Length: 228
Image (cartoon, rainbow, N blue to C red; front, side, top):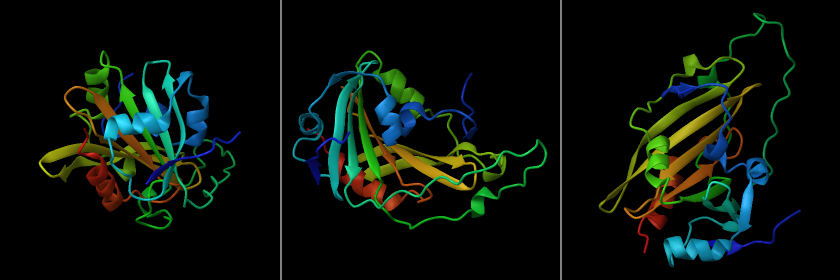
């Protein structure tokens, strides 16, 4: 479900992109949302209804904020009402070059599985940029990265990509993992909900060190694919 909540005060390498800010790909971050330049407030519930009609989100989400951004994107941010306090990043002391121990990113500690995303951020792109943005976000040249390529200081890679079948539609999705110094990580999935006449995606961000859930992403796709 979605309810309106009270607001409170170079070219990327396809497989593994390191040391780059997430930008719009991690709009699920509350901090990132706060610092994004906004031009006009929007009615989040009204936008959601325009995009999805009477569709209801699975889980228990509340609209936290909505706005039109400087680039013309209309954005709605929803937060999971049931999310527990997020795990803190691990403080890491800087070490001399060459004195860093190798981190096995494939075997780091992970939190509970099959959780709902902590945040959902819906982004509708203006028509003059729609196809360009979709081509960038769901580039056919993207490929799954290798854990061995991620340095001990952290980085980012494509964890999974493909399509989710919903009726006769196949919705493209990409999952990226940001590896943080100290051995934590953040998973963000983006799902293409566009129709021929518009460009609409949802970014689903999981809590720190909670692995992304494909079944939950499939449930989101099932609930939102049949747009009016």
